[in-house]
Image: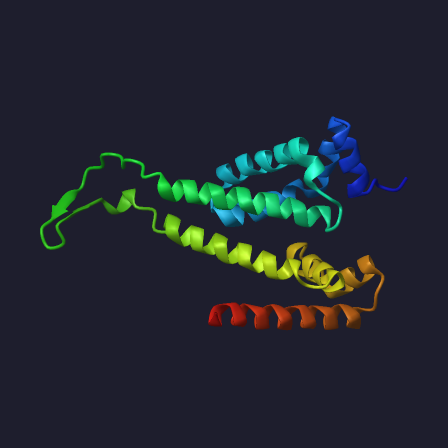
Length: 197
C-alpha cells in the first residue's frame, strides 16, 4: 500500500482527521525537532516549539496553498517560531540567582565561582545571530530549483549518501553530484552577494 502524499494528509487535516496530523508528525517530527534544537540551542525549548509547529499545522492547514512543498512550509513555520522564541529570550532579562562569589575591585564586577558558569552555553545574542543566519540560509535554499534543492536536502539534512540519494530520486549518482555542486556554488555566490550589500 502506498503512503498518502502530504497533499492528501493536509486535506484530511482540513477535515479534522487527527490521524492525518499524526502521520505528518511521524513523517517530519524528528527532522523538525533537530532543526529546532539547532536553532534554539535547547532541547526542552525545541520540544515545545515542535508541538507549537504542529499545532499551527492543525489550526492553519488552509494557509498551505500547495505551490511549494509541504515540508518547506513546515520548516518556515518552525523557523519563524524559533526566531520569535529567541527574540523573546533576548528581551526577557531574568534576574540572576544569588550566587556566592566575590567582588572584583579591578573590574568593579561581581565574580561568580567557576562552578556556577556554564562556559559552553552561547549568549542569547549569539544564538539569535546563528538562528538569523540559518533562516537566511533556508531562504536561499528555498530559491534553488526544485531538483537541486531536493538533492541538497537529502544529502545534507537527511544525511543520505550520494548513491542512496540517486536511488531515492531514480537518477544517476553523477547527476546527484553535479546538482549538489551547482546548489553549493549558487548558495555560496548568493551568500557573498548578500554580504556585500
